[in-house]
Amino acid sequence: MSGDTLPPLRDVIAAHGLAADKRFGQHFLLDLNLTAKIARLCGDLPDSTAVEIGPGPGGLTRALLSEGAARVIAIEKDARFLPALADISAAFGNRLSVIEADALKVGREALGLAAGERAVIAANLPYNVGTALFTGWLEAEPPWWSRAVLMFQKEVAERIVARTGEDAYGRLAILTAARAKAKYAFTLPARAFTPPPKVDSAVVVVDPLLGGERFSDVEALSVVTASAFGQRRKTLRKSLAQAASQTRASAEELLTACGIDPGARAETIPPDGFMALAKAWRAARSA
Ligand code: SAM
Figure 1: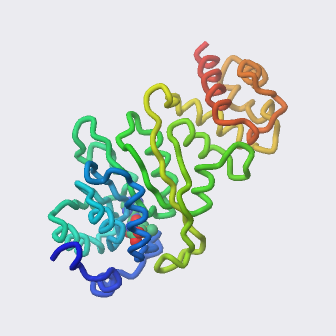
Figure 2: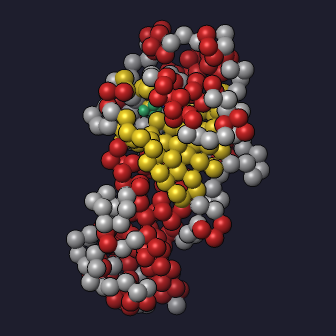
Figure 3: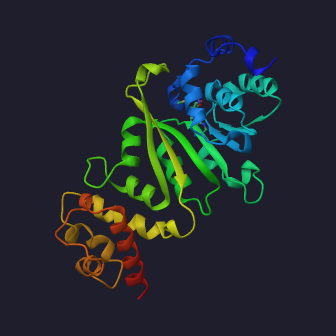
């Protein structure tokens, strides 16, 4: 068997009785043009290890291997898919290895990457854990990935790439901007999936910032953005009081030190402003 001679995904699903299980957020992408399009966004696959979360019956997995990925490490929680994935591994010269686990519990160490190696992450993410996985990858220090090509619910993708002042702008866009460059690649209608989910999906391409461009104090950033967006209709003078109460400074003092109008609302402040606030918060807390 070679990659070309593997049976069509629909036949694999039928032969192995792989009915989608809602508990695992299973919506399969069976269109080979779309899986190839996602794989091509991954960049230099022949020189990379790709880490795929939730391969399911293996549509995207096959695409990553067909595009020449040197190695694919797939993390799948639902053991029903393992026989179908073993067939894919055999067809592609064992370039695929599968870890049966909850991806939320798999750290860099379990992936067996070489020292200093950074992988490409590719995934049609299960909706229930997609955001938690993504924020974990953003926070990982140092980043063990060089690019992430990720499918989310469209609404989550919009929150990742949102610009200051847009409805979707908030904590996720700010954390993303502090740690990475994210680009909205394309939208997929719900009907592209089997079974179709209730909402459309979208693919984002995320490259981590490195060195001096990367904001390091994610804890302080999380405190100030939680406080500011926890009461997003209030002025920052009021909403930031909670974060300021953990320091020796008032919200007004923190804001003025950063050149931010205390009468402004959180959604009008760009990510740079929140990074400055996080630094001021840290300094006032340590003072
Ligand atoms: N990649 C396949 C595709 O595109 O057709 C399946 C995508 S489906 C949206 C999500 C996949 O993630 C399922 O295979 C599901 O079993 C798996 N999954 C769900 N939760 C998981 C978790 N916590 N860790 C690892 N895999 C998980």
